[in-house]
Every structure is written in C-alpha cells, then in structure tokens.
Image (cartoon, rainbow, N blue to C red):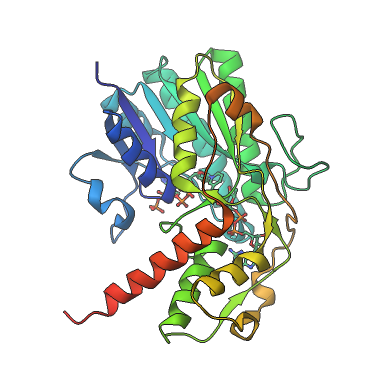
Length: 326
Ligand code: NAP
Ligand code: F7E
C-alpha cells in the first residue's frame, strides 16, 4: 500500500530534498507550508505538482491538527524551525515558540490524530555546544550555546518523553551541519559561495564575515535526508548522530571557495565585521556517526572540497543564467 508522509519545513533546504527522496520512493507526500505575503517556494517549484501542500504554522495547534488529520501520515518529518543561530540571539522568544514548543505541538497533533505514525525530529549538533570531548556521539552531554540550541534540546527531550510516556514512535536525528546549493543565503557556506560567485562576476568586491576560526563538520544535504528516512525505517525508535567525521574551519571553507572560482588573493576580498560574531560561539564540532553506519548502513560520501565546489559552481552558474538577456 502507498505510504503517506507529512513533511513540515517543506520549503526549506532539507524539506525540498526530503520530499524529492520520498516521491522517488513512491510515497504520497504532504508538505506543510506557512502563509507568507509573497510565497517562498523557490526550493520546491519543481515539486508542487507532485505533492500536496497544506497550510499550517508550528505556532498554531489547530492547523497542525488539521494537517495531520488530512494527510493521515505513516511518517512525519518535523523539519520546520527558526533555524538560524544568529537570529535566535535577537529573537529568542520566537525561536523557543517555533523550534522548541512547535515540536511539542506537532507531537500533540500526532498523539491525538495519528498515534501509529513514525515521527522524525530534526535535532541538531548545536545541542552539544560547549563540548567536553571530540568527536561527539549519541552519549555526549548537551551544553547549548544559543537560544536555538536551547530550543532544540527542549524539543529533543520532549520527543524522548513522548516515546517513554505515550509509547509514540519518535526518533531524533542529531545532525551536524549539512549544506547545498539550496541553503539559505545567511548561513556561512552559502553566504561564501554566493559572495564568491558575485566577486567572480564583478558584481561585488568583498564578503563580510565574523569568526574565521570556528570549526564545523560540514556534509552534503541530500545525503543527510537519506539518513532521516533510514532512521524511520529502523524497527524501533532511537536517536542517531549524522556527520561526516571531518571538521574544517570557516577560514578553510573560504579559501577553498575562492580557489574553486580561480581567485588567489582571497584575503583582500574578506572583511571582518564584529556584527557577525556570536555572543557565545561554538568553536569546534565534529561528529561520530558510527552508530548510524553500523545499524542503518548510512555513510556520507561528499567530501569537504567537493561540497565547496558544488556550491560555488552552482552559484556562478545561477548568476550566469540570471544575467542572460531575455
Ligand atoms: P531551513 O532551510 O531554515 O528551513 C526551515 C523550514 O521551516 C522552512 O521551510 C520554513 O518555512 C519553516 N518554518 C519556519 N518557521 C515556521 C513556522 N512557524 N511554521 C511552519 N514552518 C516554519 O532549515 P534546514 O536547513 O532545511 O533544516 C531543517 C531542520 O533541520 C530545521 O529544524 C533545522 O533546525 C534542523 N537542522 C538543520 C541542520 C543543517 O545543517 N541544515 C543541522 C541540524 C538540524 P519558510 O520557508 O516559510 O521560512
Ligand atoms: O555558522 C561562523 C559562525 O550560521 C557556521 C544551522 O543549520 O548548523 C547551522 O548552524 C559557523 C559559526 O551555521 C559568519 O559563527 C563566521 O561558527 O552557517 P552557520 P551554524 O551556526 O553552525 C546547525 C547544525 C544547525 O542546526 C543550524 O540550524 O560560521 N561564521 N562568519 C559565520 N556564520 C554566518 N552565518 N555568517 C557569517 O558571516
């Protein structure tokens, strides 16, 4: 029988790749989208005729109840969030509402209207924060360093609690940074790939950045949505880290992105701006995904340099397209 899936955060980077994957696997796919004055469906334009889009907002319980009722899901992927760490320092209450309590609203809708559904929660390496060990795995303690990280810890434990208290099938994917040509423009990798492409085309001279010394474990998003799906196919609910196991600094990503575009004097194109530093930074994250490999057979393939190449080339090409005379 055809399986039904409900994906919240459908317009985001991961939502778009996940809906593609689920369609390929033969699912009937429902995507939750919130009403905006100007629709934001750039990432899913190519999918809109193949999925059912449902109106809803993680702040509004009744819309989540209705979406769960209407989709009758076998699997729910809760990807919606205020996901930008920088903004969470400026809008901590909104971030808590959406990223933290929003997950509980999703769980409540499922408890009431689809208690047999399997649920994936988009947990994050930001929960590890100020780490006391390296690499980080499922047993590493949490010490979040931003309102975003705090909200994700709340959502994580709510999922564990709904599993234990109500017997729901709820699993957390604790995913490290994953990027792509569909990444939002304010995140570091995309800000750099887009900035480099503009410099390459002579449309800008510099990119303004913050802490170049922070280190992250960056992977390629399509491979990480495959992990989300695998997590829900496992026979029992459980929590899994998803990561490449390699960490690189922001500086290394910047250098590599300029190298891909054939620009050697990268330092002359980068300005350091205090506004891009965080009140409390996470200096070094590197994940250990051996559990996901052993139990789910998951292994990411795209390496750091390939990721920079994919993103810079995509941005150079898309600027090329947008500059062609019509
Ligand atoms: P993203 O591109 O920022 O997408 C977030 C999605 O959430 C968008 O579709 C957004 O809709 C939606 N959303 C925001 N507020 C909402 C609300 N109040 N009600 C309903 N929908 C709302 O994030 P992503 O990179 O795809 O990440 C997906 C999930 O994984 C997020 O929960 C993120 O926190 C988590 N995560 C991401 C990473 C990563 O490296 N990408 C790593 C670990 C965990 P609009 O388009 O309308 O804004
Ligand atoms: O920052 C540093 C910044 O904003 C990466 C989200 O998907 O991954 C993401 O969170 C690093 C940080 O991602 C700039 O200080 C320097 O150390 O791309 P980012 P993030 O904060 O790691 C996790 C796993 C999530 O769950 C989140 O949802 O880069 N950095 N200069 C900068 N970062 C930005 N954005 N802009 C700069 O100018």
